[in-house]
Image 1: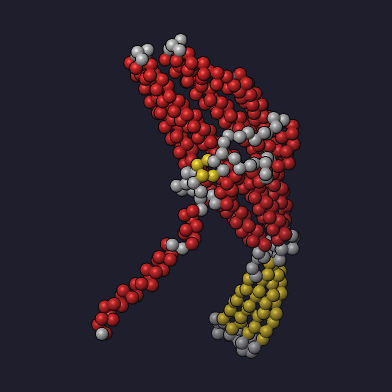
Image 2 (image 1 turned 180 degrees about the vertical axis):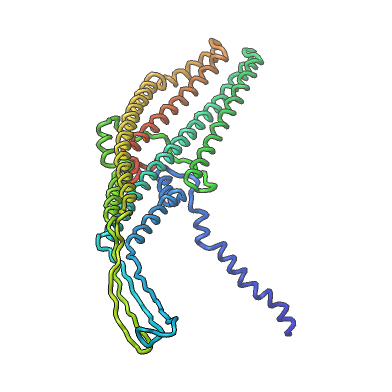
Length: 437
């Protein structure tokens, strides 16, 4: 019996380990991770994932922790020092007292009497605020890139729809040509020509579908979500951004994250300059201690103060560095304001031009597509038109629809650019102005 138990013991011991391994692999958390990211997303869902689950945004937010650590470090007071010394008599006679040993204990406490502590804390806190603004500016750029890729994917998906519809229509034309060939009204060349046109169209459709997959992969790479290739849900829809430079500039002065980051950077530089002024003052150290002997026992107290003499180092380096940072922050704010103003003017001008071009194209070209289709097909059926004319009409309709999608995509991208320059991009994301499309 004992031997049988020993033989079974390794199996019995292994069962709990197998059970724990199974629980680890099939835990609710693991299941949640597996279904956390949807295969298809609207733009609103995509931007929520960007903020809540993107490792790239998480890496940006981690910079706040480093800045907060500087606040903690700035709030720490300098440590006191304790020192101990011992004097032993080395000669044969002690001319001062009969004892052979003298010992000394001293406590030294640095005191920040010139406001260095408060200046350090304030400078660190202002740097935290500047870091937060920098992160929001980086996040706005990330959102712009994500949204632009989303629009590109939507446009490619709709291009695939157009080409797929054209492919089905090409099958319809093939049936018409085959019918005419059987009636003796079409040559083998016509059959071969329509077949080549259909295969060329299929190749183009596959290329667009590959572009859709590539753009989905770009979204995953951009957000740092390995293996995620989301499909875009919705249709291309305009954001109705006003092409008004002054109105958008007023919003930019108030809400643009790059401008806010530049302002906070200047405030942080001011705080750094004030800290440098405070740090120029030497820090005194107050000392107290005791000196005592053993034979005979004697004890005396000690008190004193020590301070650096600012003869050579008077904080010139720190002041020069802080003044330089202040000047750099001032120039950076002026440069940022000029850059955003010129960028906004360019974006609004481009938006107006693209909007006008798209409207004219819809009015003068798109509205006539149906007539082009009916006229071309009827002419070929009646024998008044050639196959090349029929294919040309089909190709013209397809190219017109694709051009319309190009113009829509270009206009929406111009709207996103204007929103980014005006600082309204994040506000658009976080309000009901953006509907799930």
